[in-house]
Image 1 (cartoon, rainbow, N blue to C red):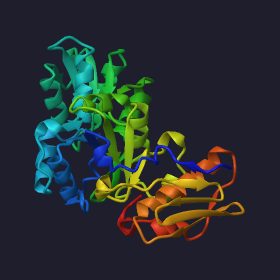
Image 2: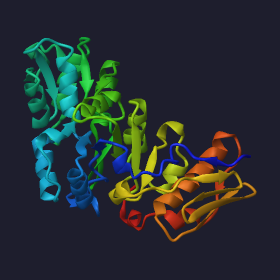
Image 3: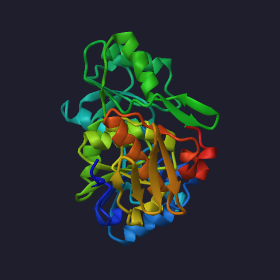
Image 4: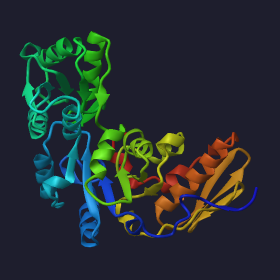
Length: 348
């Protein structure tokens, strides 16, 4: 096999120099619960000083942009309200593009969904008996059987139905709770219909968020099936941050639609010039890290250095082999060399 330089991992400029607008997922990237992710606040402040647009994109439909901005401010990340994009906003905009201004829309969710609809000059109602012409469904702690029943009555009539997002589960203090996707499935089971979807990984939220700053854009997130897949479907590059739900094991097993353009350990990686991945099947190199093939096994060695570079070269070796139909088993211990220490405390 001839020697190659990987693409897109052959560009040695820091990511901050390649993109003018960065779209950031929140949970697992900027904060975890009520605590800021290590290194995130100073990195985001540095981006602002360098004149980069920062847009914060969340599937969570239960908070208004003002509430999200207030939370970020408390965590040391002051941002204007206009730099926050929620799935409730996008769902309301989709509804406004479907029905006339002032139309009644059945709203499932909390105050954030009501606010988003009103900001789009629509009139939220709570009952199918109020003659709505569309349905927007989001989640909130107060969503109960009655709201789901009213949604089912309206959806069964064939009205346009827009879900803010399809996340099946959301983390809460007591564990994992049903997300909006689980509630949407209840309405689907009752009506036999499926909704349009506003949130990640659907392109609608990426298109909406990309209007907030000049290109080129990049999506920075921790989820393969939301942030990375959604960016790819929207024609955007992506940065996977290893501070959230995706670990090295998930990344190595990712099919092509879920493979990020870039990988960083944390947001400090946005300012580093990643070394290129070079080599051939028997050995790939990336900075101080390298892989070698021993039979069907891929062995990672090298360091010390940025673990993200070890992840990149290991992924390149494994993905290349598997895409060519050749076996690629990661040798015991290789993943541990580059697994972030903080992951021991994360639920994945």
